[in-house]
Image (cartoon, rainbow, N blue to C red):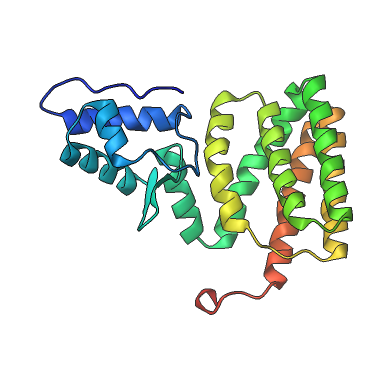
Length: 236
């Protein structure tokens, strides 16, 4: 098991411990969703006092990386501060604003993917579309939603823009959380699938403008469908 870096003995021991634990989380030492070791185990492993450890863990809870659950321990909530902040911000935003942000990111990424994709990336997109179709055919909408998220991340990765890929990796979780639960009927699901096939066709043909237009159409379809869905009273 990967060990946590022991902080140096300085006046800012607590601050160093925060950085050490944050680095451990970001590197995957504690995967998202897992419970971190008990307090006493960490005290013995790191050689720090109980108050120092609690102060550091409290700071990470405040940053959104950890979540303290009464009677159940402390769990890893996010692997980065940016992701945690974006999830909270997107969750509080109006869905129209989230959809507009998604349009900006995915439209550009799709056009870039059409110009830069590799054959391996194109094959991956074909496989993901097929997986989504199979999930929809089996009425497994949860699986279809998961595959759809993987598909759009794969399109962004095919763009070849490292900074965009990194930002979207953070924002992807926020977008999925904010847009989760949108209902789809059979007609909407079929149109949604058809647009994804068209997007892959455009990327395969290296049709930049076609890919951008189709990516925008996918988000617009989601927006149109969302407009028909019932909204919570506080959003009305």
